[in-house]
Each structure stands twice: as structure tokens, then as C-alpha cells.
Image (cartoon, rainbow, N blue to C red; front, side, top):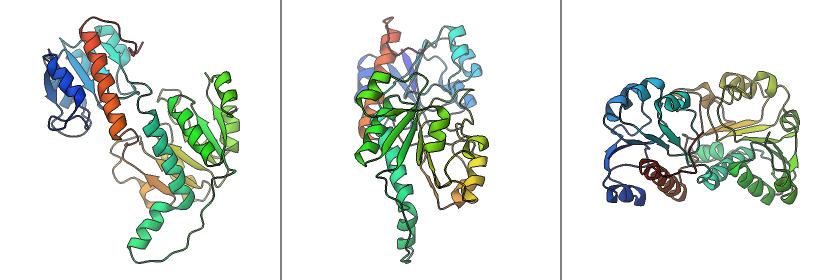
Length: 316
């Protein structure tokens, strides 16, 4: 069997129990030679003759899948499948799997880190101190503030616990919310509009779909508190970045913490001009623990499908 492995944290020269297990199963491994997510034209020659594919953040389009005559499974290294053409995969009979929940702690911790960074202007103060300045910057305390969470899945639930640890009140919107869970964990259910209007800090934990693209747009931002902070560690495209830039620059929003962008890498984004913006390079899931967990589950998923066995993480 031949398998393409493209996640940037799974490289030929790095130690990985998941890769060792694949090699022990007599799998021939082909690796990403560019160290970044791949385009469709870069993927096609690498996938030639492959039975399986452990996919990072590549664009797995209809064109890519149409070119794969032997491919049986796309095993996503991560929870999101918005960069995989699922309809095309179904038509070709290619199974798509993912690794939901295994990086939830890592993503929630980064989201909380972005909240703290913006509340106290930590990156800005660090930079100014290194430059020899001794500035004073007025931050805000988290205790007593409202944390609004959009999407109360595994990541949102972990973030809720962290926010409560700082004395924040947590409100959440999720169309599939578990009422028993929120009652047991002191989380207040709210409508979409209530979360938007009441949150001091709004954290997004949603998939990118046609319905959620630019969900946080100019109309929505107009309803938010002028000092409100938005954090996005889910998917780029959920926030209208052009509208966010205008609101942040005009002082109509307090801050933005963003790990994901509409275009990645984002190039010279105008958001980088603003001191009330903290950015990271789609790295929320990149902890030793999370990457090990994702690699192990992705490898397990792939081997199960290639062995003709049932995989509980198959994307329907």
C-alpha cells in the first residue's frame, strides 16, 4: 500500500509513533516536500498510485479526487473537512474520515490565551518593552465579564471551563445544544443575537459552511459592544475580515484574536497594522499532545478503512 502524508507536523525526519505503525503495516509513505498546505496541482502528482492519504490543510478538490484512480480514503489530520470536496469523494467512492475532539484542549487553550493577550495587551507591551519603551497600557480584568461561545462542542466546552476559572459568566449559542450539559456546568443558553449583543469576549467554534461564511459581518458587528473582543480559532472565512478591520480601526470593536484567515497564509493583511489585533498562524492545534493524538487517530482511521473495517470517524 502507498500513502501520502501531508500535515506539516508529520514529516519523514520526525519521530512519530503513528508513522512507525504505518511502516510496520508495510505502508510505503510519501511525504509533503514543501512544508506547507498543498494546492490541487501540487497534490495530483504526489497522489499518483496512492491507496490512502493523510491530509493536512490541503485543498482536496474535485480535480484532485478525479485524478486518483486508486485512492480509497482521505484521512483528515484534524476535525475540519471544509477543504475536502465531500460530494466529489462520495461520487468516487472515497471514504473521508476526521479526528474530532482530539485537539480540543489545545485549541481551547490558545483561544483563552488570545483572550488574555487582548485583555492586557500582552503582545503590544512585550514589543514596546523590547524596543526600549516603558509604556503604560490600561487593560481589563476578566472576572465578571461575559464570555460568549458560538458552538459548544468539545473545544467550546473546554473554553467554558477555562473562562469560568477566571470568574467569567459563560453564555453559549449552539443549535444542537445539550441542555443537560449546560445546566450541569453553569452555562447559560442564549440565542445568536443575545450572544452577539451581550458578550464582552466572543469566541467562535464553528465549522466553515456556506451558512457560516461571513457569519460575523458588518451587520452583526454593529450589534456588539464597542469594547467587545472577538476570538476565532475555528476557520477563516467565518469573520468578514474587511468589515472587522474597519470596526477595529474606528474603535467600534475592542479587539480581535485570530488564528485562522480567509486566505492562508494571509500575506500583508491590513489587520496587521492594528495594535488591538493579535494573530497566530493557524497553530491552535499544534501542541505535542494534540499532534500526537491527531496523528494516531488519523493513522488508525486510515488503516481501518484500508482493511475494510468500520471507522467511527467516517464523515457522512
